[in-house]
Image (cartoon, rainbow, N blue to C red):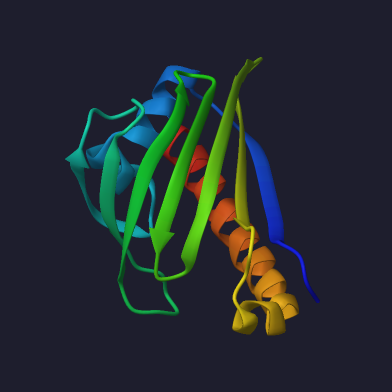
Length: 155
């Protein structure tokens, strides 16, 4: 099968906190460790949290695998509304986009993971179905965990 590799998964939930607090939890390294159960340490490599060009490096650990280092680079920031980050880690490279909308009772958080490769390698083309399945399942589980962590933290 030829053509680009293009897969997205999304998840949303309402968090009982203002968008500014959710934004900080997503962009500030020390809060990332406090809020997200899979993150064991986080530091800023360069830039200022929440601004375009900010690079955060953190270590993630889930129950089923060894720890892995992840780099998040902020590529677009509309404070308290939209955050786009390029994620590179042991699970591959993809874009993470978060939309924040204030609603009654808190903030609606919609997170989207998206992988796009214009010209996938021969191996990636051969494994397209497996990559799509793995990314969809893994991304859905990760997003569900992220929304759950935010909800518990601000409860």
